[in-house]
Structures are given as C-alpha cells and as structure tokens.
Length: 597
Image 1 (cartoon, rainbow, N blue to C red):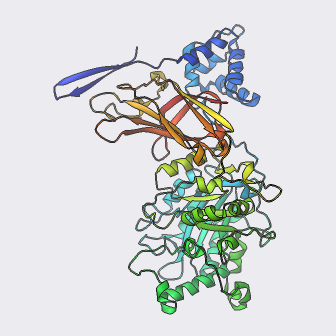
Image 2: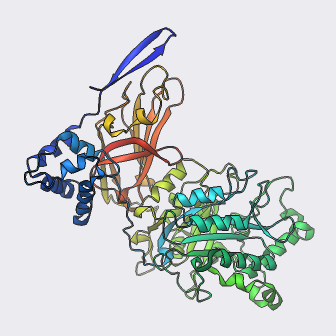
Image 3: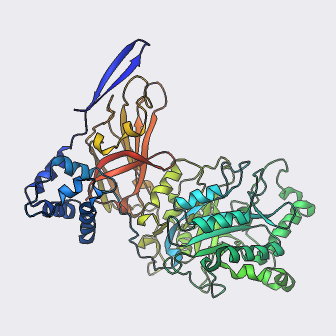
C-alpha cells in the first residue's frame, strides 16, 4: 500500500509522491524461512540463539519479554504456547527485528566485573557541571547538574568560591563573568538525582578557593546534606582505591587536601603585586583561575623546579585547616611537584589524582606516553578542556582513553561530535557510567613495558556492517515521518537520505564511509555493506549518522548514534537514532546487521 505525500511548488502546482511501506529485506526473509517451518517458539529460540548470538540466559529473557506481551500482539503470535502453534508471519518476525526495545544493538544491563579498584575504570566525567552555556558569562545553576545526572554522568565538578559577604559558598567559574549559584542548592539537587540513572558511585570534584572557615562550612554542608550516602575513607592516604561495587549508592569527594590552600594564597599575593611583573597575566583579559589551572601551574609544561616548602612543615597552617573537610576526601588531588616525569611517578604507598589540560596531556603522551599508562594503572588521571574553549566545545577523547585516563572531563552543554563520542562510549556496560578498561591498559610486561597506542599493530578483528533497509511500518509508529513534519527536510519533496558509517578509535582504525543517496523517500533502502579492519577493537566506536542531501545548502541532519564496537551484538539489529544532543528519537531507527570476522 504505502503512503502518498503532496507537496506544493511554484505556488499553484502540486507534486504527489508515493512512499511504499517498509518491506523486509532479503536477509530477513531468509531468516524467517529458516525457522518458520519449525514449531514457532522453538524456531524463534534457535534463530535468536544461533543467528543473533544471544546467550542462553538472554534467549530466555527475550522470549519471556515476548510472551509477556511486550511486542504488542506480534509477540504472542511469535511464541504462542498452544498445542499446535501457528507459523509466525513474516510481518510479525520483521516487526520483532525492527523493534529497538526487543532487538537492541547492545545490552542494556551492567555486565562487566565491577569489583576491581576504581582506577581500573573509565568514568563518565563532567567539566564545570554547573554552567548553563559558555565558560565566560553564562549563568551557574543546578539545572545542568540535574541534566548531567539524568544522562548518567558520574563525576560532577563544582568550583567553590566565597560569596560576596565572605560568609557562605558560591559555585561559579572563577575569573569570569559567570553568575553564581549557592553551593547548598547544588548539593541538594545532587542528592535528589545522584542515582536516578545509575547506582554506581557519584564523584564530586571540588575546585577549592575557600578559606579554612569556609572549608569547615563545606564539610558540614556535605555531611548534613548527604548523610549516610557520603563515603568517608577509613585511611588517609589510601594505598588503593575501593571498587565501584564497594561504593554502590555512595557519594565520594575528590579535591586537594586543604593544606594546599597555602599555595593558592601565595599565588594570590603574587597577583596582587608581590611577584615578578613579567609573570602576571594581562589584567584586561579574562583568564581561568580555577584550581584546574592552579593544580598544573596554568602552564603547558610543569616547572623543572618547585622550591616551595612542604605543607607538612608548616604546623601553624596545619592547625588552621579544616580537619573535618580533609577527612571527607576519598580521591586526593595533588599539585605536581617539579617536572612532569616527577608528577607521573607512582607511589607504592598512596594513590592520588592528577589533573592535566588537554594540551598538557598531548605533550605528556608524546614525551612520556608509557609513564602516563603506568600512572593510570593505579592512580587517577583527569583531563580537562583547555581554557580557550570558552564556547564550551570539547576535544577528541581518544588520546586520553588510549593512555588510560579515567576522568576525561567534558563540557556537557557543548553539543559537538566529541560529546557524541563520549555519550556513545558510555552506552557501554548498561550505561552505568563506568566502563572497565581493556586488559592491555592494566598490565605490564616483564620489563615494565605497557601498551603503546602509537605502535603499528596487526588487525585483531574485522567488523562487517550491512545497512539494511531503513524501514518504517506505519503500524509500528516509527520513522522520520512520525517524528518530523513532511516539510521538515524539504518544502517541495520527500527527503533524500544517505548514511555515514565509520569508526572512531586509534588513528589506524579511524575512518568514515557513506552510502548512496536515496531520493524522495521517507523509507530509504540502501542495502550496502561496509568492512572495517580494527587493530584495537576494544577502543573502537561505531559512528552512524543520517544526513538529508541538499544540493544548494548544508545537508540536513537526520539522526545519529555512536555505539561501542566491543559491545555490539551480532546479527540483524534495530538501531535507534538520536538528535544532535544525544536524545533518542521516538521512532527513527535503522535496521543493520553486525558480523565479526
């Protein structure tokens, strides 16, 4: 049957287009034939097990979902338990395959070992989580924090500053025109939404610009707001981080121990005229003075020499610090002393967090790549956007991930390609916000050798991706014509869709390819196959993006998704697409097949 669409052009003429209903592609017909003659439930079980590669437990779960009526009628016909089950129709079978809820491309359950130390996991990490927009003059608010938590982010960053009366704590981006929000408001929202998307631990990284009395006030705020949710470490410092499993439904604090405030005061004094004038920034320019920059001296290379006395040698300062505040810090951040190679030294008696800007990381991985990987096997490396990203854009996370950096901090309000890669990466492991690092990043050879992402490696695995007809059946309520107006893409005709398919990963694996353009169709059928040889499949992301071809203007966006290759289920799968911000469309999806060779 199909649907017909009328479009007006030249004011008085009408063009009529017929869009056929989605027809099952040859592979679906062949699969249906392979089991349709069998007893219905038994045949479907065999298909889901053999063709789709589902485990016995997942086969049982899928058939239970179907027989429970989740398939809106088609399910019960597929798995009917009557004495003489009828053969499921091709339409029923096709509807099952084309349902992202019944036949998704990746698992929705946590399935990795979560009992290893915290440093063995990549963690979904936000940067300046309170900002509503750009880094210079947008408002600070608890709303972006709530949105991040709803999306599964597990590390929230708050920059703490004294308020104008110096008697309370505000959250804002220091040294900029961003409007503040009260810290207590942020903490209350964090408590309410901390575990709405994941029960695994939530980390709050505090960038600390407070006096000792306000640090003590923060300690009280944290303990009173979070109560038993707040994890308080039993030893200071820790020799090894606890596991995400051991910290389930707990909130943990990461910041510098408070004695480090001495350095901040010295830096302030220098800015006020006590230091070398050549070292001062241009007073007319806006500059990052959050403790990201403080922690790394704000320079792209760390000092060769650090002649400052140890904080431990200053008993007067120790007495003035907020002891209660220090007790709450689980992941201690440390200012690197001296050269970068010293900052990356592994201490056998304690673990810590080191922060580097994306620029510093690029230099560190070029000159000390193996040291970075060794450091991240036990300690935590946090990477943050360079200060010039005032529009809240992001950087390519692959260099940081492939060197083991756990906290790759992103501006969640910067809706760009890099953020889509981040969202796709953390769809892995049931979307819980924690992804176990591949074994090669956690092991050392007999002479201390570690993984080198820049080394030339053999192909480990080949991913074959066949895009099958991207089809919509009206009765399923799926597709662009359900989610968009008929003139959204083109005022005078149905859309001309094509799909870009590719890999984001280590340099040797990264590539993008595209299908041909299908003109004037709401239900485009490509039936094209792509092959991707992968040297590091454990770090590869499948990028899928649909565009609407436009001869005269920039091509229109038709949906995207990013999926972790190591999580892809084999066989014919329904792949839901998302908008630019990563929000899943109600109906739009592709039918694809994944094969590993």
